[in-house]
Length: 235
Ligand SMILES: [Fe+2]
Image (cartoon, rainbow, N blue to C red; front, side, top):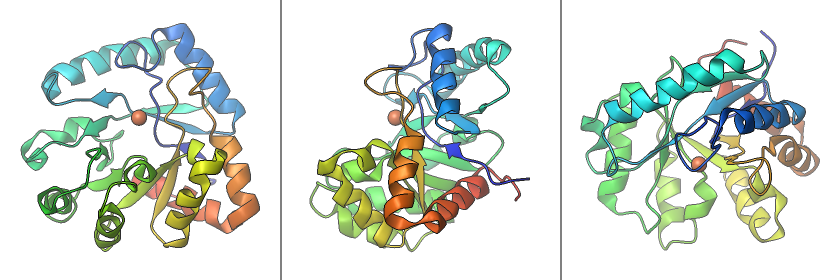
């Protein structure tokens, strides 16, 4: 199979979270995503453990997915997962239902604060004890909290992947952070984190143009290979 461009993070599934409100919006978002060159669109609705249990979320998600799947185009291909808000002892939850597609990859949104050692331990346990392929969502957003840069460095010793939002490369104020993450040599993938067709629209292609210009085509190839390996797609 040829290399695929994967948007690893989006809120396109209709009526499940604060992303797309209806199927029409979702279809337009998928069209915009295809225009951006995306072959595989990962759908990652928010899962907040303090709002509902995993089985209730899973039921809502599957219902929405079946409605969208009936009308969605052949490209981009949609694959469903979740953006799981970190919670203590999450390793004890039934996270298999929240993995992306049929893979062991899970997308985790870390706490918006300085991470404690116990948070890092919980994430490590998911990687090392339970063999989840952990992806930390939009890591650039957490670097302003004291100590988190160091924690990211420590965590990078694990088989862990850091996802950066496309918008981080498109704004002057955040480009430096995103560039630091790339230069650190971490395993990095991209996501649009698209929520709608306007203010938070699919924008992966725009970020890829910037990355290719400043970091080279091989940087994009590495990201694509990492994303494909997470979804267990063979090249
Ligand atoms: Fe998100």
